[in-house]
Picture 1 (tube, rainbow, N blue to C red):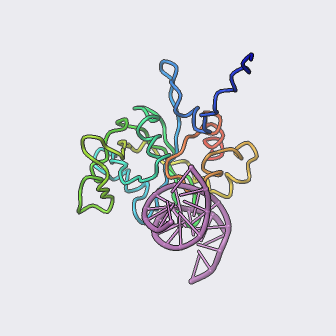
Picture 2 (picture 1 turned 45 degrees about the vertical axis):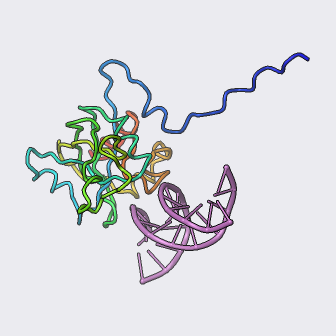
Picture 3 (picture 1 turned 180 degrees about the vertical axis):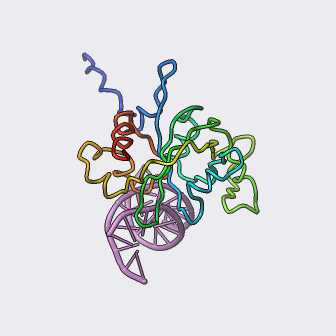
Amino acid sequence: MPRKPAPPKPRTSSPWDEALAPRAKGERRYWLVKSEPDVFSFDDLQNARNRTTRWNGVRNFVARNFLRDGMREGDQVFFYHSSTEPPAIVGICEVARAGYPDDTAFDPASEGFDPKSDPGKPKWFMVDLRAVKPLRRPVSLAELKARPELASMALLRIGRLSVSPVTAAEWRAILAMAG
DNA sequence: GCCAACGTTGGC
DNA sequence: GCCAACGTTGGC
């Protein structure tokens, strides 16, 4: 019997492939991180030593993959305030250090402790983020939602993702909205 | 490996 | 404070 042609490869791609794909030399990418300002605000980042902090405590696998495999030093990052009125992008920061193991996962005293994360094979990762500057004015979630060209933005599609990719076009559009 | 129960996030 | 969305856990 002649064999049927091999079925198409199972589709292993995800909507996030682009953000994790190998990049062209010198290519810079864009991201967005969320934080509740009552817990850690953009002002807190600006006031931090060296305007830099470890972005630790992320315990979601998709976000972890962006931290570990996607973000590179020099990438630009929107800083978004969640659970506040209004929820909004308020500032720009940058990746000061690419992904490395989140040591709060190893610390039983830490809220982020995960007994399943072994220092020899870390499960959770963080980056260092350095404040660049506040936006000229915050761009609220409502404004983002009102823009058809931003409809496919990860932030709008997957509300709960705490670290998400931003395309270059989205980045430019949002900067323009901030004036 | 399925899926119900449960917990968390975060907008409203 | 409510609850929708969705990730995680655990029983089977």
